[in-house]
Length: 500
Image (cartoon, rainbow, N blue to C red; front, side, top):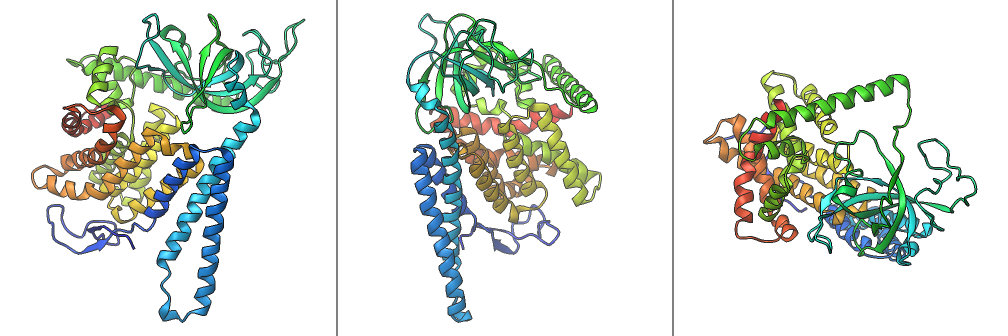
C-alpha cells in the first residue's frame, strides 16, 4: 500500500495530540486510490488529444484488461489457500484499468457525438456558417491586439446549433430551439435553413464593444445568440472545438432573451434570490470603494470573484506577477469560507454533525452568491474537502475523498484533465490535505488558533499551486515570492470581507 505518514485521528475525528505537540501515534494515510486517480488523469489527457476511435479502442483495451484481471483474481481466490493470498497490488492494477476505461469511453462518447453532428467538417471548410450559441463564461482579453491596434477579447461559448446552408442573421431559428416569439418559422418568402443540433464548446473572437452584450459576469438569465461567423478549427486537446469570428457588423443578435417560465412560486423565489444576489454584489463593490490604493478594484474579486471594476492596468500587473488566480473563486476561497463557518459554529458549541451540515449549507449559499458555473461548483467541492481535512478533523479520509472526486469529475468531463483551473483546484486541495495540519501545528506555536488555521490553509495550498503556476503564467524573478507573500493575506480579505 502506498502511504505517507500522518498523525492518527481518534474515533470522533479529533487529533490525538494538542496542536502544538509534535509527538503522538503515527499511522499511514490511505492513498490506495491515488494510482487510480493518476491513471484516470493520464488516460483523460491522452483521450482528449486523440480521435473518438482511438479513445474507444483505449477504453475497450483497458476495460477488458481490468475485467480479465478481476476474473483471474476471483478464480485464484477460490484455488489458493487462504494464507497465501496477496492480491492487493493486482486489485489496484485492476481498479486502475477500470477507472481508465471509464474515462476513455466517456471521452469517446462525447467526441463521437460531435463527430456525428458534422460540426468538425463544417468548421474545417472555412466558409461562413450560421450558428446559435450561448456564452458560458466572461470575456478575456487576448495577449495581442488586433491588426488595427484595437483590443480583442475571446468569449467561451457553447454552439447549440448550426445551419448547413447558412443565411443572414435574420434567418429563422431551429424548429426545436427557443426564440423570443416562441416560433421557429421562417419569414414569409424565405427558405428555412437546415439546422443541425450540436453541443460543442468554442470561443468567439470579438472587440470589446461586441463582447459587452455577450459577457455574462452580471447576467441574470441565459441568452442565446444567432448569426453568421467564420470558423477555424482549434488545436486538438482543448475543450474548444473552433475559433469563431463574426462575419460582418452586428452579426450576432440575441434570439432568446427571456428566462424560461416556471411555476409562480419558483419564479418569484428565483426573482427574489437574483435581486438579493445583485444587492450583495453591489454592496460589496460600494464598501470596497471606501478602501485605499487598489482595494476598490481588488476586494470584490478576492471576496466574490467579481472583476468587473478591475482596471486593465491592474489586470496586466497581476498577470505579470502571476497572481490573477487570487481574484478568481477557487477551492482555496471555498475552503476558507467553510473553515470560517466551522470555526464559528465550534465557538457556538454546535455539535459536529449539525455543524458540518450548516457549514455545507453556508458554502452552497456562497456559491450561489458567486456564480453557479461548473468551475465554481468544482471549486466548492474541492474546497469542502480541504476544509473538512483541516478544520473538521477528517484528515485520514480526505485524500481518499479527493481521489474519488477527481475520478468522478474526469469520468463526467474528461476535458478537466487539460483544464488549468481543475489542475490548480486539485493541487491546492492535495496541499491542504497532506501538509495543512503540520503547518497549522507550526503556526499554532506562535499564533492564536483562529489565525493559525486559515493561514495554514492558504500557505499549504500555495505550496502545491505555485509549481503549476510557473509554466501556466511564465516565470519572472518575483512571481514565486509575490505568491508566497500574498497567500497569507488572502484569508484576511476573503473571510472578513464576506462577513462584512
